[in-house]
Length: 113
Length: 124
Image (cartoon, rainbow over all chains, first blue to last red; front, top):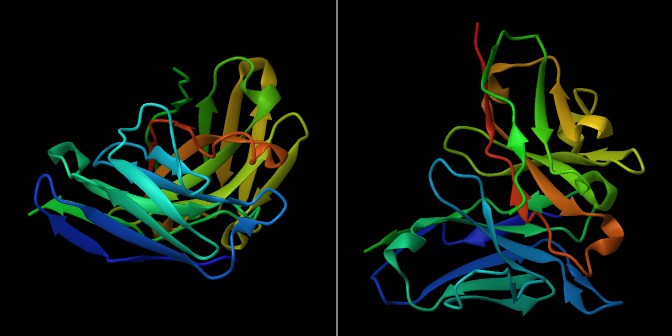
């Protein structure tokens, strides 16, 4: 199975400041035939199901604010919240869907400092 | 807005089985797979497996081998996840999530719509 790791486990950022979350896969999740990374980011708030934010590593889902951006390729990826808002307090998960055996990262908790 | 509606909470005894349902909008099963993800209390997301209704194909994470069954009733637009030989560690919220067919991953987003979750509590 492809193992996904995330860092940090948690972070606290002031409102308006940048938050950066890293995700690493144990093998490449770049599909060479179409040059797409099969990496997604989800946001989960307490008591709610996860919400898809980013897919193909950098494509924002419809309706997701543009302060959320994704980058990276191969095995190393980043989710950036450019200007943290109070409503962004949540746990963020990365997910690989390159393999038919889908796996998630352990999650990163984002709080307000 | 696509809505996946799941069945209600369950309390089960160790060793028993649970069957969770996920009702999808009509037409979902012709173009999408249904995946199942669980989340133990205070823990992260764990993909269990999924089913492609129009092909009847299924796959699952190795740890659920022999214990999980995915089915669909296309006439009712409903998918089911049955987990057997329940133990306390299976206490979790179980989610269904719509995903594209494997050959559509280059054209469609992954798990874009989720059910509201079903809490399954395993306790003697």
